[in-house]
Length: 136
Length: 136
DNA sequence: TGAAATCGGACTATTTAAGTCGTAGTTTAA
DNA sequence: TTAAACTACGACTTAAATAGTCCGATTTCA
Ligand code: SF4
Ligand code: SF4
Image (cartoon, rainbow over the protein chains, first blue to last red):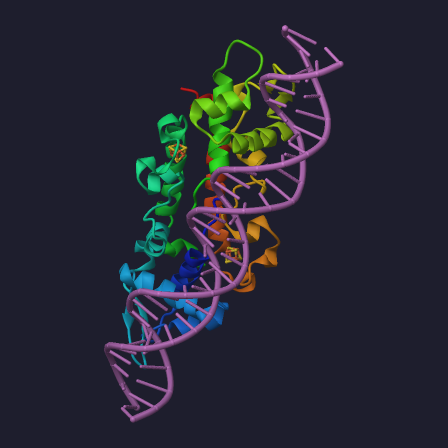
């Protein structure tokens, strides 16, 4: 439980790789896929997610690829997570991700508020760490 | 992602309930199941896990049930989690739960150490909060 | 025009979580 | 001593999330 998804890991590896690329224009999904042995088609999807969220911008065509839009210091780890995961936050509890009563016992729940505190701590951890910090 | 399991939630609700019971000897699984609308057979399993780990002791027979063994201040949230989950810790990454090379790209991974830092923060959150704190 | 890249969605497979069932064993009150 | 009220354990089923694939389309540039 509480395991981070492969997609997010792949996304972090990819975006870190891009941040380290100094010269040249674009980084392609293929390049990253080869370098880190990540399944290409899956990585492609992840890149599309990152692209949709604006963290990177895509360029199609022969010499295409992706370009990082911000400086690493301005990209939070949580930005990457939110770009990739459908649920736009780290949600420790079901009642936080969906409607209140998607949890069958929400009316009898006695542990929601303490768990929220812990969730806040976790969110904070992902929000304070930036891409810059994972470069070296 | 990063969602806590129902079993753990049920376990927390149950053990908190037991901590609040002042008089009488035992608290039964049925009683808790009724009170919080938790599926009985599933809760029974959870109680067995808690029992195996020593947090509560079972008493069979007609007036049986479970008894809390420690004071709430001495029970950490992480104790409850570890009792219930097969993986005996909050493990953000696959490579932490199983063998190093259960992750197909562990040789090319560039994000392990920063993620470990975050994991430590999360672990700390679960280890410092006690049952006492979630009573009221 | 064709190769190389992204795009989007539908699809399958695998794994994990959630919940159930059946049977056996223990204790105690009537 | 027997029936009721429990726990104990493991196999099982179902449901849902994750991981990964496939294909047809679009864009770009030599
Ligand atoms: S059990 Fe409580 S904390 Fe968990 S999902 Fe339901 S309402 Fe939320
Ligand atoms: S990608 Fe890295 S951090 Fe994630 S499981 Fe593999 S080795 Fe561990």
